[in-house]
Image (tube, rainbow, N blue to C red):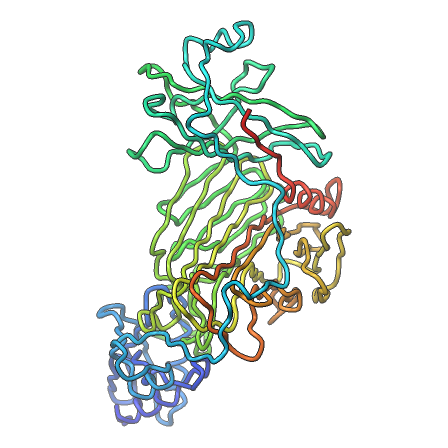
Length: 560
């Protein structure tokens, strides 16, 4: 008969080296109970938090380890979520390996240990990239009365909105624009508007046809003196076009426009599925990161992993014989991973059991936006929490366009040791056969499964499947940093294959010679567009090149 004590001793040998110092499942307190009935063993385990959904990365390894004992019959492993794991289950060895110090709270904390301090203003980035223009703010004191506009052109609107704001869009690069997103921030004088979403109408000079736009106020029931207006604009090369925002109609018969488009959003909270004519995107129901992307127009490619199976390992047919992984991964498998930072352990937003904060803009016909922000956590959370680094990530999806955008910002609020910051990492399975890349101002290059090295930061990188032409590209539109020496160096990136998976990873910051102490006020951000296209269609890979040039040089908006 197998002794319970022998099983515990066996589990003490089941270790994960990714903690820095190898620690066993017993050291970190993930084994709740061991019961032996004759030759059969029943083990109850838990995981650090509910964001660790790859349960088999623990339960399977536990089962396999016990099956290696002489005389063992069947092994049943059950994962329990109650009571939840707490940091006081870490033993002395684990607390030492995780670099707890005397006087730390039970959950531990990050400590500043590096002897290399980065200067906030003296740390120069290797590279940065900026857009030609920024969103326009239509100030509250910039307005006119509709009654003062020419009656032959605006007569039919005089019975509606009483006020207007005027602005111009200018195409400055000699590129034709079709359905280019334009974002306006609009402020109103007190008393001029009651319900922006119902009252605002958008017109182009020379036309009395109302243009489709989406209006979003800061929060339901909040202030009505400010809102965001988003629409899709068409301009010829070098054209300048004037637009009018009409508003100020308090009539109860002034209803919000009912407009439909190909943009369909379903789900709840941040766990959304967003689709248009080109793609269907699914966000993780755990923490809202992009986990699946399906090509719709061509119907060939589906990117992402199957959902994890929430089973207990009660028999051999349920056991995938997974290796132990409790210190590095285990979170929901996403195709877009970052941003994150690391010193000894990695702190990721994909390790969140749920986003600490989020906002969602949905229900409109033009765009959907999901923003999540907070302090990233490590795999052993709620142990070793941190409030030194905050991260925000925003996805924006549009009607009728083959791309969506991602904007990220990492802000340092307290001194912190950082060795690496990764951003814009994509991990696909075997959906693609070749890599795609382009330098700013250059031509598209198509290479094998292992892409080229870069002497400068690429304008775009991606992958293509040679058989069907389906392609995905990350367009690096802008990036900046402060307080991170040598940030965005081109050597710190990789495009190619790892474990037969296609990967693009960007180390936005990589400290030379070990971690640097980064100062409060340091910041690092990116703005990228993610494009799906088919290289067999007209334009081939130049579709990606042309889209990059358009988005790098957006329409210039000015008040008039």
